[in-house]
Length: 411
Image (cartoon, rainbow, N blue to C red):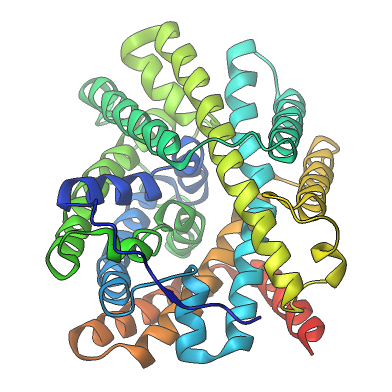
């Protein structure tokens, strides 16, 4: 697939603080509603080490993508950076991996919303999956009809979620901070790496704002500072969330950890309000990414990285054939979960494996097209990402299979 590298229109609308808000909005999404609990189930209290390790990884990662944004200000997504350093075939594989992550992530996100509805109604996993299936259907239908949630509204939802997380931490930690910390590593130290591979979903997004480098008033000055402010906010929020989740939910197997935190200090009202926010956020996120993913699938089909059938038919703002395939695939996965043939953890880890693979190629390309300290940061981030990939274990077969299909179709 040929990825068009075109200069970003220089509409100077972003400063440090607005840019930092976009960074935070790109990172804090529906994953925080479930993933911290899954990590705590995998590693126990030692999951907080995985949080710390991924924050260490995020520092050079953010620097590398900020440098790419400043020095190579193009629109077209992370695949554009991959094409510049590694060629068109690698860019096609990157696009396919990103699409695979959304293909798997859409039902996972809808399931997260379903769990909060099930908690609100006192129901179980089958109801949660059924609600997720209904949410997925609504979002697919909305995109087919051209009803889209704006990215600005999504940023507002993420900002509200960030505020709710802060409130949840403040109401839960003071009274429960010392609970559930022993045994510290009940599943062994290797489980910390497993937790990190699960938590990676919460650390994707550093590349998103880099594409807006041309929108900053002074990219060389504002973009790195916006990234630094966002990193500080993310570090404080994520460490606090990790500590609170472990203290309140460790050992409970909860699938609604944020609701559990809110209930500690605010009771049932706080729990119910969190469920409503969870549904709004998950549906908003699915709406934004579903349309974009359908367009990406059409572009990949045009470039022969996916079956050409997906690119046929009338041209629309949201291509209907890829949209139908994404919706059908998500429905099958949720039906398999209802039938007990699939698990939430497997869905999340498969999605994270695709995102890890995207970052591996993006950072490998960055080590070729950057220089100086930025290149060193990209190399460090690449090495650390490969370590996390090692703990992804058999789930790496998912991006491996997607890459094979993309390359075979392309040839």
